[in-house]
Amino acid sequence: MSALIYCLAFVGGFVIMSLELLGGRVLAPYFGSSIHVWGSIITVFMASLALGYLAGGRWSLRSPSLPKFAGLLLIGAVLLYPLVYFSEPAMEWIFHAIEDPRYGSLTASMALFVLPTVMLGMISPYSVRLLVRTTEESGNVAGRLYFVSTAGSALGTLGTSFYFVLWWEINTILTLLTATLVLAGTTALVVARLRR
Amino acid sequence: MSAASGARPSAASRAGRPRSNLRSRLFPGARASRPRPDSGRCYAITRCSIALALLGIALLAPLASAEVVHRERSLYQTILVVKQGRTLCLQFSLRRAQRNQSCLDERRPERMVLAYTRMMMAALLFGPAPQRILVVGVGGGTLPMALTAIYPEAQMDAVEIDPAVVKVAKRHFGFAESERLKVHVEDARVFTRRAVAAGRTYDLILLDAFGADYIPEHLMTREYLAETRALLTDDGALAANTFAISQLYDHESATYFDVFGPFFNLKLPSSGNRVILATKGRLPSLMTLNARAAELARSLAPYGIRIRDYPRRLKSEIDWAANTRVLTDQYAPANLLQAQ
Image 1 (cartoon, rainbow over the protein chains, first blue to last red):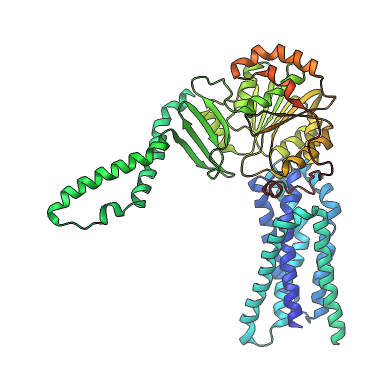
Image 2: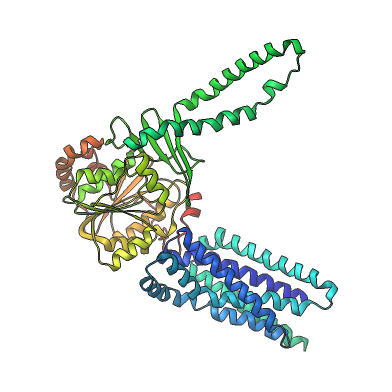
């Protein structure tokens, strides 16, 4: 089971950075690609991950289980997919409501990316809770988790910027990321059912 | 320009100093390699310094023709102002330093040194004198300054993302804002969207936003061109400085065709650039273009533009692969495509 949890943490890291990179593409038609647009995106992702870590740790106190863990990924997918349909109208509205492109891009980043990123940020601390058995191994487990999830992030960044944008449209990539989360979450649910 | 001339020598000497330091760091062995008896030290030092001086002259000789007048790392690029003889050029890259963005001939400041800037002016062939002009990408300010001189009555907006470029254009290239020429330091996509929302229109739009190293991908999509087209008056004209080589040529052509329908390609044997000329309506006939060229010839001559040569070089044939994918906001890997 622990291998599965490491895999899911990898998927979480992958999706987070792929989404962050796509964020720049999503915002550019409305807010350009000035340095403050990337500033907005990175700020929002960092802040959302911070909140996600906090929330994930808190939630792991309440009878943690693999199905609940799967729920994080599935809810993440549910929060991610609407970007395909709602990012344009949302940005259209924000573009006209806020004149200053800095705060426009910051608001748009928040509107689009906070919810899925908070949810994906919860994965790491929750994984720690599911994997750690003794105090002695806790540091080792945490280290391995950081390793796989950050390696996932690295691969998500590379894959998206080098290949995905060359092969697919942004909405196709977002759909594939959603599908990946759904697949990962469902796998975890199935494994949990089989083990009982 | 007069303000800049005073500052130039000091800037040049500042740029020159690190070079000599670097050289002595590169060849420290020249002095230390051969140990000599004490009695000979004085002689050795003299000889070494002569050798070093000769070496310095040998290394500096090729550089003497091109001196770096100004160098600056901005938020978006490395900006270089390079002086070669009496010509001052703006460059945005260290790696491909030969790619000039903008050049100024100090003896004849009105002359357009770079072929692509002259080619961009072919957009004037399309219609009557423009009243409202939009220039995207200021560079050294060659195009906006020429247009303000030719059409002193016209109202112009110039958009540039990099504040440092505007500063350098003002200091070194004689670029100046005025009542009639407003500079907007912002992303062109944002400017365009706001202009469309405000219902503004232009008779002449010049797109010159692509550097040698990096393409702003959101300025090369169907949606951006559609927004830009919405800014054009019915008989307005658009000129875009674009890529003549690489796979991007086809993608860019297909995208322009998708938005504007048939357009003119202007290529000159002497230039590696391709300028796209487009309009909302139908493309003018060769006869109309020739007549217009004859009218313009005298006013454009001081800029070195041989406008009468251009009409026969305007080609509207489709010279790209028919199934080429159009670039959109959803699919815009322009930098990756250019590298392929």
